[in-house]
Length: 279
Image (tube, rainbow, N blue to C red):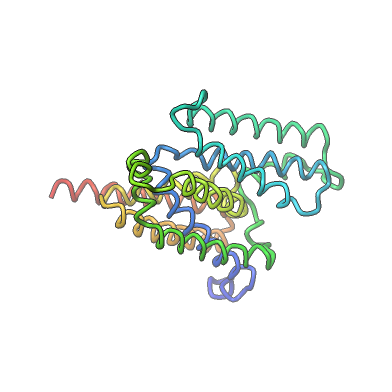
């Protein structure tokens, strides 16, 4: 089939729409997370979501979102709220939650295989690395992605200065009267929702690529927070579109193709940054 034929298919159009919106949200939040040294929170939360999905499958929940989303949001709030006074620091907490949730989820699915599931290893591999789930989206997931993108972009635009202050100096922002706890809570909730939706796009093991690569690529060339945020959003959307289109035509895995596109763009921006520094 040609690319034009693929673009006329409704499921490909839905995949492009959701992929662009999820990539946009992940990139905007990714700049803040990278600068705050929370790059791996995407991995931790995605593994939490995988563990919750395993529990939902074992218990026979028809709608796993009822369990996955609240659990992921709770863990996001706990991870971002762990400050300097926490007994377990942020990076160690992410590592513990990430490995623990992944191991428990896989263990439960093997000990108590869901009814009607004959290929547990195949289902787990699809969940971890992404599969064709982005091409079988429901109307609810599409509208949820649209609503989420509107909320994230509005939050980022309306509270840009607050996010900027919290990102670079949270203590100073609190001293000037900013309710840092509230903003951290809002960021944690949005991150958790983005992570859960992104699992359909790239799988739980590759979600960090949507968060980290666009921000790091933009930082190779630009230095201001505003320029990096805008550039990261453009890079993320471009890589998502190219990854989905190449995957549809070449038959490659969607998530891995999107990550490969991000790696190529990162290499190009690294060369551009090097050339700019030399000039």
